[in-house]
View (spheres, rainbow, N blue to C red):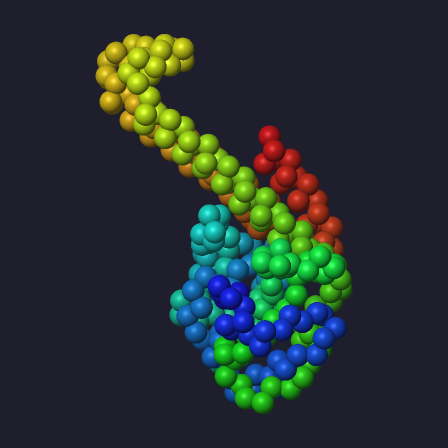
Length: 279
């Protein structure tokens, strides 16, 4: 999804619900594949449901799709998530048509719509049970004279209510992951800041408490202090990597059973991942 400061800058200013009609119909994008051929950077972020659908479409594992350069991992708001590799257009595009159209990622399904979460608005509406709405990106799709279509029909997702519930769970989980990563980094930064102002006497006492008095005497105040600061950053980085690796492992690396219900698999993985992260 595109990043924006003000939704009114890229939309018609309206937020649509699943049952609303929206001028997004493109007549099957006949003769046009510009959005799939463009360098979209890392904006086509993949959810666990997208990974399940890609497995259905290709019978490939996450690692196989990475190796084939169809997808990649990118930093997004302090965490790492997979996205379609789009620097030379989409790898699933052939002769101007999508080879995985029935199983395409959610952001591709949305386009030229976007999804906006009510908790991201300055004045979120408290009576919006779905947690998010849809908006029309008015300047992104070149197809003229778009027809009106119901949002739910445009998405074409089976069991849309269950998918909506999943999207909200995933959104809230990512907020939890980002918060957890932020807390780890914040604690390290605070400790590094504390060490930057510590006196020689206090640092020497601290070294004695943790059994490193001889190391302190050998290295001296400045070198020992820098070593402790570097250790804080290294420990923080390792903890963050551990959080990110855990999330990627549970929700992406472990191949989904395409013969079984996705949402049940997702809920089970969520329980296990949260348990692992809370250890």
